[in-house]
Image (cartoon, rainbow, N blue to C red; front, side, top):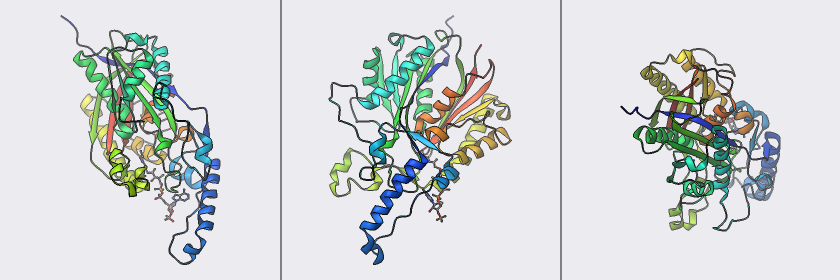
Length: 376
Ligand code: COA
C-alpha cells in the first residue's frame, strides 16, 4: 500500500539587504523634516490652522517596540527629508524586478541548504504583504528566474502570508499535487511605510525569506516535521492600507496617507495578544502537545512587548531569549518574513525531537501557527 505524503520543512533561506538604518539616523532625518515643516508652516501654526509636528525619539522607539535598526533596499532616499521613501531606477520589463530579485536570492539560499536542484521543485508561492504589480504574478517571475517547471502564484495575507503559504504548500503535498514547494516572502516594506508618520516611521524593514516545504520521502535527513498548522482570520480596520489600482478613480485622494500603512497600534496590541495566545494554546492541545514544554517559539516580529506577553501565556512563565528569540532589534518588523527569519537564524542548535512553534499575526487580522519537530 502507498504511504501518504507527509509535509516537512526541508530548509529555509534568507536575503538581508546590505544597507541598514539605525534609530539615531532615522530620528535625525525625521526631526529635520519636522523642523522644516514647522518652519514652513510657522504662520499657519501660530494662527492655529495647522498642528505643529512633534519630534520623534530614539528612546521612545526602542522602549515601545524593541527595534534598534532596520535593513532597507535604498537608504539615502529614505533618510532624505525631501523624499522619505525608497527610490531606484525603474526596471525594463525584460529585467528581473526588484521584488523577484530578492525573492530569488532567498530561494537560492534555501535550495542550497537542502541540496535541492531548482528543476526538482514543483511549485512557487510568493507569499508577501505587498506585490510590486498586479500581474504577471511575482511568483511566476521567480519560478522562471529559478528555472522551475510546474506552477506558481501570489498570495497576500499581510503579516501572516508566510505561515498561510506554509499551510497551502503542506496541503498540496498531502493531496499529492506537488512534492516540493517553495514559499518565498520578499518584503520591501519600506515602500508602504509612511516615513513621515511619527507613530509608525520606525516600524518596518526590508528582507526576503524562503521556506522549502517537501514530502518527507524526498527531504534531506536534516529537516523539520510539520506536526500541524492552523490559520485564523478576523476582520479588523486597525491595520489598513488603501493603496490599489482603483485609487485612479479618485485622483484627488490618490496620494493621501491612507494609501500607505496605517494602524491603531494600541488596539492591535490589546486585541491580537489574547487572540493569538489562545489560538496557540488551543492548537497545541488539539495536537496533543504540552504548550509549557515547547522548546522554542519563533514568533512574528512586530513588537517585543507583544511577544513577551504571548510567550508568557503559552509557556506559563516569562520566556528568555533562548525560548523566544528576537530579530526585531536588527531587522525591525519585516511583516510576514519575521517569524521565518527568527526560525532561520535560531534553530540550528535544537536537538532531534525538540518541538517548537512558528507563529505569525497581523493585518486582517490574520494569524497562523506551524508546530514543528526537529527530525533525526
Ligand atoms: N517618538 C516619541 N514619542 C512618540 C512617538 C515617537 N516616534 N510616537 C508616539 N509617541 C508618543 C505619543 O505621542 C504618545 O504620547 P502621549 O501618551 O503623551 O499621548 C505615546 O508616545 C504613546 O503612543 P502610542 O502610539 O500609543 O505608543 P505605544 O506604546 O502603543 O507604541 C507601537 C506604539 C506602534 C510601537 C505599539 O503600539 C505596537 O507595536 N503595537 C502593535 C503593532 C503591531 O503589531 N502592528 C502590526 C503591524 S504588522
